[in-house]
Image (tube, rainbow, N blue to C red):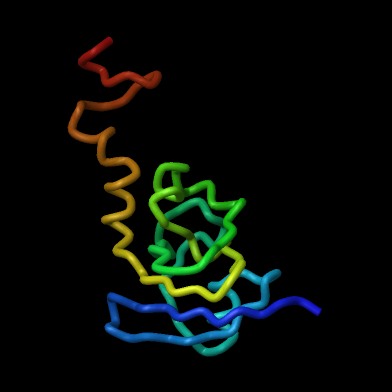
Length: 122
C-alpha cells in the first residue's frame, strides 16, 4: 500500500489554506484538484513556473521539474504539477512573475540574446 501524506497549502493569492492528503506516488497538484482544491497551473509538465511553491517544511521529490533551476530547487522552490510528497508538507504558492524573475532575471536588461551572448557583446 502506498504511503499517504498530509499536505498543507497556503494560497497567497487567495489568502486561503488547504489541507489535502497526497499519496507518495501521485503529483500534489493532481491530488489537490481531485479533492476540490483549485490552484494555479499552466503546462502541467514541469516546464513553466505557474504552479511554483516554496516548501516551508517537509520533503518533496520533483525529478521532472525542468522549469526550475537546481539553484531554485535548493532554495526550497518546487513545481506542484510534477512534485511527489516524501513526508508531511507545508508549501506556499508563489507569484509566477517573482519565480520567473528569480530564475531568469539576470538574463534580462542586457540586450537581445543571440547564440548565448547579448548582441552588444558580439
